Length: 123
Figure (cartoon, rainbow, N blue to C red):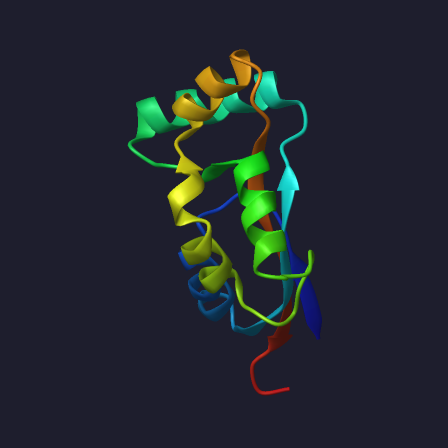
Protein backbone atom coordinates (compact mmCIF):
# COMPACT_ATOMS: atom_id res chain seq x y z
CA UNK A 1 0.00 0.00 0.00
CA UNK A 2 1.27 3.48 -0.91
CA UNK A 3 0.16 6.89 0.28
CA UNK A 4 0.67 10.53 -0.50
CA UNK A 5 0.73 13.29 2.11
CA UNK A 6 0.41 17.04 1.66
CA UNK A 7 -0.14 20.17 3.68
CA UNK A 8 1.66 22.82 5.68
CA UNK A 9 3.46 21.01 8.46
CA UNK A 10 6.99 21.54 9.76
CA UNK A 11 9.27 19.75 7.31
CA UNK A 12 11.20 17.98 10.05
CA UNK A 13 7.98 16.29 11.29
CA UNK A 14 7.19 14.60 7.99
CA UNK A 15 9.46 11.53 8.41
CA UNK A 16 8.14 11.08 11.95
CA UNK A 17 4.51 11.22 10.79
CA UNK A 18 5.19 8.56 8.18
CA UNK A 19 7.12 6.34 10.60
CA UNK A 20 4.55 6.67 13.39
CA UNK A 21 1.82 5.47 11.02
CA UNK A 22 3.83 2.52 9.74
CA UNK A 23 5.12 4.01 6.50
CA UNK A 24 8.57 4.55 5.10
CA UNK A 25 8.80 7.96 3.42
CA UNK A 26 10.71 9.01 0.36
CA UNK A 27 10.90 12.55 -0.94
CA UNK A 28 10.13 12.51 -4.66
CA UNK A 29 10.93 16.16 -5.31
CA UNK A 30 10.82 19.60 -3.76
CA UNK A 31 10.34 23.08 -5.08
CA UNK A 32 9.59 26.68 -4.37
CA UNK A 33 6.41 28.60 -5.18
CA UNK A 34 4.80 31.94 -4.66
CA UNK A 35 2.22 32.05 -1.87
CA UNK A 36 -1.33 32.34 -3.20
CA UNK A 37 -4.23 33.95 -1.32
CA UNK A 38 -1.42 35.69 0.48
CA UNK A 39 -3.28 38.15 2.70
CA UNK A 40 -5.75 35.55 3.99
CA UNK A 41 -3.24 32.76 4.41
CA UNK A 42 -0.55 34.82 6.14
CA UNK A 43 -3.05 36.26 8.61
CA UNK A 44 -4.01 32.72 9.59
CA UNK A 45 -0.43 31.51 9.86
CA UNK A 46 0.56 34.62 11.82
CA UNK A 47 -2.30 34.02 14.26
CA UNK A 48 -1.25 30.38 14.61
CA UNK A 49 2.32 31.38 15.37
CA UNK A 50 1.25 33.88 18.02
CA UNK A 51 -1.32 31.67 19.72
CA UNK A 52 0.47 28.32 19.58
CA UNK A 53 4.17 29.12 19.77
CA UNK A 54 4.86 27.51 16.41
CA UNK A 55 6.52 28.91 13.33
CA UNK A 56 6.00 28.58 9.61
CA UNK A 57 8.73 29.23 7.08
CA UNK A 58 8.15 31.81 4.39
CA UNK A 59 10.70 33.42 2.13
CA UNK A 60 11.19 36.64 0.21
CA UNK A 61 10.11 35.31 -3.17
CA UNK A 62 12.08 37.38 -5.65
CA UNK A 63 15.36 37.05 -3.74
CA UNK A 64 14.83 33.30 -3.41
CA UNK A 65 14.06 32.76 -7.09
CA UNK A 66 17.08 34.85 -8.11
CA UNK A 67 19.30 32.79 -5.81
CA UNK A 68 17.97 29.43 -7.06
CA UNK A 69 18.47 30.51 -10.68
CA UNK A 70 22.04 31.65 -9.90
CA UNK A 71 22.76 28.16 -8.56
CA UNK A 72 21.06 26.55 -11.58
CA UNK A 73 18.65 24.67 -9.34
CA UNK A 74 15.64 23.46 -11.29
CA UNK A 75 12.20 24.06 -9.87
CA UNK A 76 10.92 21.54 -8.98
CA UNK A 77 13.95 19.35 -8.41
CA UNK A 78 14.75 15.81 -7.41
CA UNK A 79 18.47 16.63 -7.27
CA UNK A 80 18.31 17.96 -3.71
CA UNK A 81 16.09 17.20 -0.73
CA UNK A 82 13.81 19.62 1.02
CA UNK A 83 16.05 20.10 4.03
CA UNK A 84 18.89 21.18 1.71
CA UNK A 85 16.55 23.55 -0.15
CA UNK A 86 15.39 25.12 3.10
CA UNK A 87 18.98 25.52 4.26
CA UNK A 88 19.95 27.25 1.01
CA UNK A 89 16.98 29.62 1.30
CA UNK A 90 17.62 30.42 4.99
CA UNK A 91 19.01 33.92 4.26
CA UNK A 92 15.63 34.84 2.73
CA UNK A 93 13.48 33.29 5.46
CA UNK A 94 10.85 35.35 7.28
CA UNK A 95 8.13 34.53 9.80
CA UNK A 96 4.51 34.66 8.73
CA UNK A 97 4.12 37.98 10.57
CA UNK A 98 7.14 39.43 8.76
CA UNK A 99 5.87 37.97 5.48
CA UNK A 100 2.49 39.65 5.96
CA UNK A 101 4.15 42.99 6.65
CA UNK A 102 6.35 42.63 3.56
CA UNK A 103 3.38 41.58 1.42
CA UNK A 104 1.42 44.64 2.51
CA UNK A 105 4.37 46.74 1.30
CA UNK A 106 4.21 45.08 -2.12
CA UNK A 107 6.66 42.19 -1.76
CA UNK A 108 5.97 38.71 -3.10
CA UNK A 109 6.20 35.86 -0.61
CA UNK A 110 7.14 32.25 -1.29
CA UNK A 111 7.33 28.88 0.43
CA UNK A 112 8.84 25.48 -0.22
CA UNK A 113 6.78 22.54 -1.45
CA UNK A 114 7.58 18.87 -1.08
CA UNK A 115 6.21 15.78 -2.79
CA UNK A 116 6.63 12.63 -0.74
CA UNK A 117 5.75 9.02 -1.28
CA UNK A 118 5.05 6.57 1.49
CA UNK A 119 5.27 2.84 1.40
CA UNK A 120 3.76 0.69 4.14
CA UNK A 121 6.67 -0.80 6.07
CA UNK A 122 7.08 -4.51 5.46
CA UNK A 123 5.65 -4.33 1.91
